[in-house]
Each structure stands twice: as C-alpha cells, then as structure tokens.
Length: 190
Length: 310
Image (cartoon, rainbow over all chains, first blue to last red):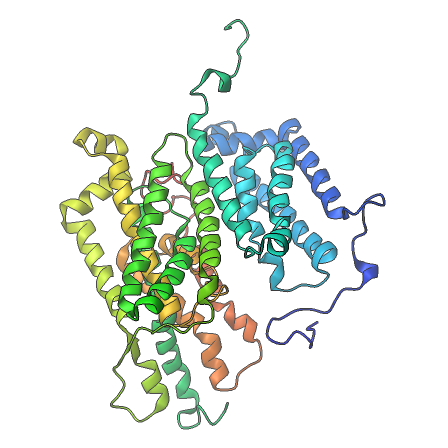
C-alpha cells in the first residue's frame, strides 16, 4: 500500500488512470460534481418528500414531541448519522479517485470536513441550497492556485477569505426578519 | 534505537509516558480549561482551534522579535483574548449560532496564522526554558522526562484555582448562573452577554497561551503542520471531563499519556502497529465516553444553557 517514494509523508501508490473517475460528457469537470448533485437531489427528496425525512425533522425539532408521536428517535438518529457519514465517505472517495489519485494527508488539508459543516449552516440545512453555496465556496478554494501564481499571495489567503465570508454571513443572520424585504409575504397580510 | 534506551530497557516506557504526558498535555490543559470557562457561561467556542494556532504563531513571532519567550506567551494570550472577544461580540447578536461562528473563527484563525506566519517559518526564536527537575539523576531518560516547562506548572495551578473560583467566589457563581439559567441571571440584574464576553475572552486568552507552548517549547518551532486538531480535541475533553476544571486537568494528562504511547514504544523498538498506537488517545477517549454515558439520563453536569443541551 505504502508508496516508498513518499518519504516522510505517508502516501499510497497512484491508483492508476483506469481506476480514476472520468470526466463528465467530454467536459473538464470530473464525475465527483455529478455525484454531489445527485446526492443533493436525493437528500432533498429524502428529507422533504418521505416519511423518514419528516420523522427526522420532528426528532430534530422537538425530541419530546417525536417520542410522544411514537417515533423511535434513537434509531432515526443512528440511521441519519449513518447516511451523513456515507455522504462524507463518498466525498473522500471522490477526492482520492478524481482529484489526488492516491490517499494521503493532502485530502483533509483544505479542511473539507469543517467547511462542509459551515456550507450546511449557510444553506440553512436545505439540500438544494447546498449546491450554489458549495460551488461558491469550492470556487474560492480553487482560486488559491491562481492567487499564488498571479498575485504572489500565500495559499492561506483562501482560508482567510473563506473565514471572513463565513463570519459575515453567519453574523448577518441577526438581521433576518428585521427589515421588510426579508420578511416572508403572507397571503392576505399585504 | 536500542542503545538509546539500553540502560533502562522496558522501564523506559513508563518514564517516557510520564514525560510525554507532561509535554503533550500542556496545550490540552490550557485549551480545555479555557473552553470549560466559556462553556460554563453557556456558550461553545469551537474557534479555540484557530485561537490555538494563532497563539502559536503570534507567540513565536513576538518571541523572535523581542527575544523574550514570556513576552511571546503573553502576546499569544492577548491575541487569543481578541479572538474570544470577536466570538463573544458576534454571538451576542440575536439568532447568531455560536457553534457555526466558532467553526468560522477556526478557519479564519488558521488562515490568518498561516498568512501572517509565513515569514516566521525559517527563523529560530528563543524558546521557553525548562526546569531541570531531573538533574539529580544520571539516566538520560529520567532527566528528559523531568524536564518540566513553566507553563505546565502554571496550568496545573490554574485548574484548582478555576475550581475554587467556580465553587467559592461571587464571580464563579455569576458565571454558573448565566450558564444554568439566563432567566435567573437576568432577574439578578447581570448582563448575560457581558458575563459571556468576559468568559469567552479569558477562555481565548488561555487557549492562546496553550498555543504558544506548541511553538515555543514542544515541538518548539512554528510551522503550518503544528496543530493537528489539539484545539478541537480539547473541546471534546471538556465534555469528557463533565465541565469540571480538575477533571479537565486529569483528562488532559490521560490524553497526553495515551498520546505519548507511540513514541515511548518506539524508543524500546516496538515499531509494529505504530499508527494504531498513535490513534490510542482517541480510542481511549471514545471508549470512556461510551462507557460512562447512559441511555436514560442526559450528560451529567452539562450547563443548561449550552446550545447543544437546550
């Protein structure tokens, strides 16, 4: 498993071109994005259009109400956590089989795990809203190489920018509902 | 390898564990005590990972510029406190989620530390001196294990002090009241956001100090791979320690000892399953968490106003 050429940073062998995920429809975008979009749609259908998703939302919203309604909260929690873990595992596979080509410490270097949690926060836990937010944040992440080459800025610039963006959006949550344009229009109420 | 541990043989393992526990656990002691204070006031600051790295960078930079490592430790604390105030200020607004802001601050702190710390990767800053408590011994392992850093002693004194503060002082009572019931605190006339801001700022100060230990003593230089999630692990240790300062100290020491297992075994030439032993502290923490948890009651000792328990 261990590639002897990687001396102090453990790394596996290159998995080989035949085992890499291909590009989508002749474009330069690998199938990882396709998988991501499909998972987003599946998650949306699961959470908003099935009984399991509804049960999970009740359990998350009010655990006592869920118990009174006869839901087995423990089983739902374990099942949903398992599915969430499966999504994260799939992200790891895409990172190996489409981007790096080998398993090593570079995979977690950009902090995908933590950034992913924030993407979910900003998308307000809506699986379809995750798509644009993830593309925005991923785009900023991908601009790191260009920033290094063109502007001679260190690669951490991207992290700083992402951190500032997240803090701004999260703290602007406080203005939600404060002004008229943010308020949901209710029928008959204007 | 074998001749290094030669004179002691397998007795080198517990001695190396002892020394490793002291060396590895010091940042955990500081960060978990800081997080304990913050969480007692009813807020979770996950940004302490970023604070830790920021403290490591600024401590190293100040130590290099002024030539005084203790000035670096102080400055690391000040930078940590600034991050704490930032977290408290953002979270004091209504509907702002403290966990999410914490992760945001973690990214920002890590990024800023890497961004500003680039010029300090090469230069060598003066390190914190170690107290040679093992000078009486002529065995090198014993001397190494008893090289105790001043910051460790500060941390060991800090834990009972914080326990005393929580249990015996007016300040401790105010912090606990704010963490247990905002209604009661409001009725008493205390500013909830004010108390939480102080608690988060002091917690950030401690986490920054813990970070300066990483860059100024062990491993003792500033690099981007310096912290491997110690800040987040320390937050988990607070839950593990059931929000009690003395337990934080014991949990950090236990975690440090488990973390020192892999290098200690390596010193007596047991190198197989090395990566398994590196995972030992995490396995141990998870195992004890599972064993001490219960299906029927919620976590004992959790401050009632924490967002996770509300």
